[in-house]
Image (cartoon, rainbow, N blue to C red):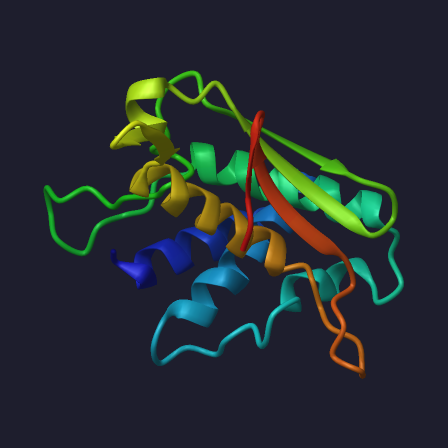
Length: 175
């Protein structure tokens, strides 16, 4: 992936005067995440750094809204490849058609991302009569967990702000 081109596009989106506040915030979070993973750039810091823009004592509902926006942005923004003709894979964007994501607060101490509409042939494998999660579905769940954990800063005692879960109706994928 040509990270520098993507960084430039995100910065242009953030700085454009007609970009809406919600879209600007989502682009900023995406930029922070990209900078944290790109060698030679200033990172966004430890787990929970994306929540910094929301305020230290924010309730859980704005965090849920920000996670929803990040997932929506991941579904629509196409990263640019460093190698012409080679597509960049994004697990959220490239999930099969019909797969949807629901982000909800479970009280004030948990955020649950539910993956719905998973095709049987893509999401499950038969291990000798025992149905288990496919590697692709597990990778998608891990990617969603990464997005959620980006908002989960830890207090001085090391405890997380909230607990996160990725689930599929009938199954819970724990990270």
